[in-house]
Image 1 (cartoon, rainbow, N blue to C red):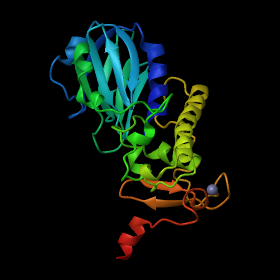
Image 2: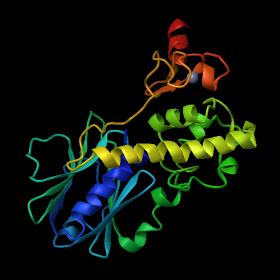
Image 3: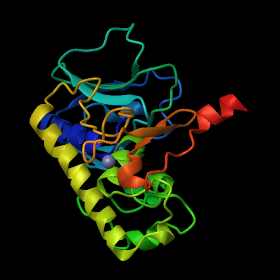
Image 4: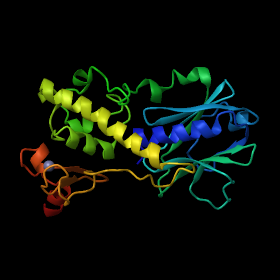
Length: 282
Ligand SMILES: [Zn+2]
């Protein structure tokens, strides 16, 4: 699940490796991956990669001063640079950008769903691109000063913090670590936060994402591995002792994700109803 720290380390490594590289050709083996029509991918041929950066969880590869590849890895995509080219039977390939020196920038996706997407845009269209325009301010390095106002009153923090329109970069894994770190219930509403709690949340967002990146800076080298070593201590660690107080961590299971928390540190001792379990018991 690439979130802000995973995407940030990816673009740092790719930017250092690809700046100045000349593209030979590009193809999109993914059936639905390419979401733009003009310019065509052929327009990339012969052009130079000028930089790789991100906005929220989206990746922007600037090419030849005029074009930009905008990508979203969604939940199962990876953007990796390899020394050699993919074989025709690599079923994970969604977009292949072949570099003139033989390397290949490859958007791969694991699992059966094809959700990751790419758009090739003129650089001056990028600013007006919906998926970027609708993003909230970056969660890192400085979470927005108006975080309290941005977390709208009625919604639980767990959902609001993952809403990319509210704040960009946080997803299902790091939100659990952030809320645990701030000692806040995932179901607490933004409007119910005291100034001290809001301050804790603000500090936790910065500290947790910073910590994740520092770790990746130490351990991640090219080629970026399929599975990043996410240093999570709460998310998906239900049943294990809370690293702060020793209480067994609990979880609420949803259709396709799990929310983990410490009942002692975050919910005043209350164990939240597990929706999956209660649905099965109906
Ligand atoms: Zn605890």
